[in-house]
Every structure is written in C-alpha cells, then in structure tokens.
Length: 425
Length: 85
Image (cartoon, rainbow over all chains, first blue to last red; front, top):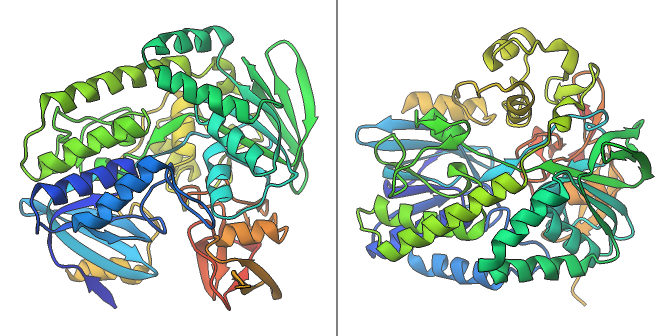
C-alpha cells in the first residue's frame, strides 16, 4: 500500500528550526499555498527543540511551533525521505512512514536536514554506555533516567554546556566536562562575544547549573575501558593521563552537516557544506537549503536562513534587514568553528584493532590512508552498512583528509516494497 | 491517579515504561546494554539518539531493524534485542 499526497508548491525536508521557519514563511507568503513539512521526529522541533514526556519546550520553540500550526502548512511527522528525483521543473519526493511508501511531488524543495554529531574513533568507543553528547540529550528528553549515574562528557563545542546542565538537573552526576580545545582559543572566542552579552550570559547560566563538576580545557578522551560495557575512561591533557570510573561516557567532536539529500540532487558542496546563493538557493535550480547543512551555526542562524529559503521558494523578496542579520550570524558561526577546531592528537587515537565502520566492523588496520573513500568502500565495505557512512564517513574525512563519496538512493535503508513503489511511478 | 505508563514485553519479560518515551529509553531503563550484536558479535547500544547511527536496532513486533530511538513505546508492544544485524 502506498500513499500519494496531493502535489505541493513547496516541500520542506526536516522539522528543526530552519525547516519550521521555512514552512511557516512559505505558507504565510501566500495563504492557501500548499506547503508540506516532512520530518522524522514524533513532532516538529528537530534535535534542539525536541520535546518528550513532561517537558515544556523553550519560549522560542513554542512561538515557532504555534506559528507553524496556524500557518496552514501540512506537517508529515515520523516520515523519512528515501529519495528525491527531478520531475519536470519540480521534484518528486519518496518517503517512508511506518513501513509504508509515501510520495509527494512539488515545485520547489527546501532542504533543512540539520546536522549530526561528529564521532571520532578511539579504543573502546563502540562499547555500550559510550554515546553521543547530543545522543544522551535526546535519550534524556525521550524519557531515559540518568539519575545517580556517573557521567563524563569529553568532546568539543558549545553543546557540552547545555547537556551537562540538563543531566545535572535530571539527577545525573557529571564528573567532568573535558573540552579538547585549548584554554587560549576558548578565551579568544569568549572575548569576541563582547558584542553579544546575551550569549555570554546564557553560557554563564548553564555553567552555574553544573558548578560542582570540573570543566577542563585542553583535555580529551584517549580510550574507553570495559568488556561487555564501558566501565572507565582514560583522559589526557597531553602530559598526564588519568583513568576515571564512570557509568556513561558522552563524546562528540562538533557537528557535521547532513548534506546527503543535497548531494543526491547534485547540489554543489564545499566539503560537506551545501553551497547556496544569497536567497538560499543551491546550485540545483528550485532546491533551497537552510540551517546547519549550509554551515554549523546554531538556532538563530537556522531560523533566519529558513525564513529566507521559505520566502524565496515562494518567489518573495527578502528584506535588507533580514540579510544583514544573516551576515552577522554567519560571522558568529565562523568564530565558533575557529574556536573549536580539532587538535591533531584526536586523529591518531584509534589503534589498528579499533573499529572505524561500526555497521560493518571494519577496523583501522584494514584501511589504507592512500585510498579514496570510494576505494575504502569497495575493498572493505566501510560506509556500506545501515548508516550509509554517516558515522565513519565523517570520521574518515577527518582522519584521512578524504572527501565524501557520491550519494546514491535510497539514502536511508528502506523496505523493498517502498522502492518497488517508486519504480511503478 | 491516572496511570501514565504502558506495558510492553522486552525479550519475553513484561515491563512498564512512561507513555511518550522511546523504545530506546525503555530498554535502557530495563538494563539492556546489548541492543544488537555487530557483524563480529560485539554488543552495541544507542550512540546518536536521533536515528543516524543505526546502533540501536531491535526487532519490534516481529519487524527487524527498527531504530529504538525513533519509535515510541506502545501498549502491548513486543521488543527483542541482541540479534545479529
């Protein structure tokens, strides 16, 4: 059985801040226009505004989700996009929802697919109880209790602060937050924020929530130790190593743009960042992109890009004021990238026996740095498993200096019935 | 008092989980560390929590390869973990 939605003027893929803003602004641009928002989550909000049992979303999230509900845009939740094809001047989007195929065609498409965490392999990183920094936040919001658990957070980036704060508020015992970037780089970045006291205030408030935990800069994880699950962690500052017992280790080394869908459509990318013009249009005419896929920079940047993409997709103009707000947020994002640049030591943590591709259990020693990512796939199956190289691909970019291999449909594992359905169209 | 939990079966054992929580949350609460077995038999458990890494795959109501982090608990649901995927 397959479902075919009524053709839309605009389809937005991804229901985080950028996707919500795009859908809202497209639908508000002309009342009665058909706008469809496709999202994998239980409800719109993406990772940053994820809700869960007993959680009240922040004010900004409520503002946008209420506006979305009133906009007339159709929200298609718990639906994954499997393939997007050109269809005349427009596009045809193939999705899967609860094991069923769903198709929708549209004139323009907005890709607001967000970002994922970058994981770097180190000995023991595949053990149960080693998880992502965003991952533990998502699990916490989905109702997991970490009360009384001893937690170490070791990675990089501003995401570590709110996660440490919310784990502490939920009764978790955050033993340490280890930030790999140096104290000097972090101080330079903090000083550059003098123009945005609100951001500094926010950081201070978050830090206050886990004041009892140590926050160490220039410190990173070397290995996770355990047999059937992780039991302890080796931490280093480059001079001294320490082994700490804990129940959960959270790691994550910044974010990686989810550009698979854009690359499938043949949009130009710079590394993994989707290239867009000043109205957020990609190099594929009629395909727009907003938020983290165009560069990592947080909620406000995503909102303004979504706003521009949604309006442009409906053929509306964008005010100078909105454009200059975007320019300022882009400058902030560049500072963020510099501040949390990854140190070289992180690229050599994995030993020969360390698994690199978690789906296919390909180990470090199986991979020749002289290869391309395509060769690694062909010779070892690295990146051929269920996650389609989303985890090991970004890690190998970082470790080997490789560029991502081309993307082919389906971009997510799909049922054969769904794919057959596409063949019939 | 309204009972805001649902009953599900995990590897044959009955358990309760908060309404609105994900299957992954319910399994962690049940003390499960081996969500799936990797191709070389290693235990694996959730990493990304958002449907990207596919490490939390379990069988739900007979359907294999379901990402436990993306599925909400339902009353009467049956979950099997530890299978080789």
